[in-house]
Length: 151
Image (spheres, rainbow, N blue to C red):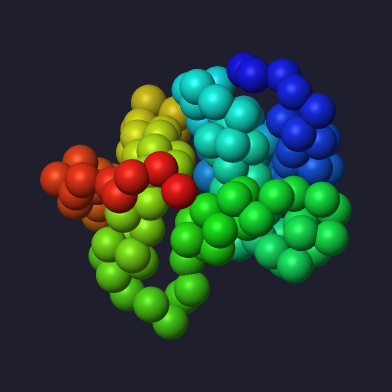
């Protein structure tokens, strides 16, 4: 993990935002963004990994994060990573694929979400298998794309 004033701010917000949430296995949800952040190699991607589900899964908005002082570089990535349910999933993945940080965070997210070892064997049902297939298709799409130059 990279520790800077900005990443510490993101750590605190991530923990606060996901404090009461659990994942599909019953574990504290916050372990998921922490796991992604551990894989990042710079400040901006670490912050984006920590906050990647805050707008999608809590009451916080991108505007709230901007008012908290998160830079536009982070807000741009979070806008890309927040899936609008009105947009078909693969179209959403295609849209974010051209941004190098969004692509990097989404690949880490998909790898972690596709790891069926996180689930108890009794919970691996048709839905979990179908979700994993969808995520693996998204990973193939992201790996095939060449991200644009750093912004």
